[in-house]
Length: 148
Image (cartoon, rainbow, N blue to C red; front, top):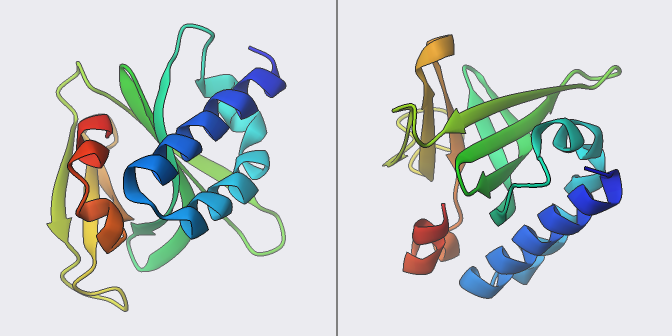
């Protein structure tokens, strides 16, 4: 899949997020993040994929909160984020729907974002989890959860 096709598909997913939640500000931030993750998205998204939804997020991993991008595809979900101060390294987690790996709702129990509603992405193969912070607008949208 060409980089232009990837950008177009993910941008479409960000537009769907804006339509479902009415959160145009966050959708604009998503548009800014797409080129940052472009090379990794080109490796992870195939021509057969349909992007259901994409949105920028705060990824919380142990003791850190980082800017990221959540992409929901027909058969799996992608979470991408960057670490590093001077040399940025992109990290990603792919969670397939069919393999029994789960995405669940909850609230952060500790840290500076305590009480924030999150999607918790459990990846049994890596024995870890990632939490993606949600806005109240997204949390209130039933259509958002149907697409995620």
